Length: 132
Image (cartoon, rainbow, N blue to C red):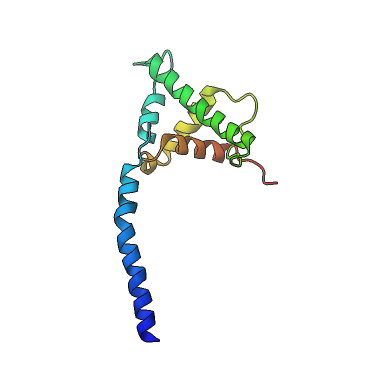
């Protein structure tokens, strides 16, 4: 009985040891088009009229945040995933920008994560969906 347990434990350890390199390589190979730091840079201080304004970066920021919000709504409409953020009518792209910047300012350790996941988390915390 003890021998069987020892063999099972050895098999389990061997499986874990074999999986670790694959898990590490998968995590290392996960690539994002933008991480939080990239989006923050695009969104900070780029509005028209601000010093060193960059219209292209500002528009990229707004478009990216709109795409995150629209993707969340689209997946919910398709039935692929529950909606994460219930953004009310009347919220503007500039509102999305400010919510993201306020949220990420409080969480600088998250800047290396996917920009889309950070933006969606900021939106879902600002505009949570009611539980049904």
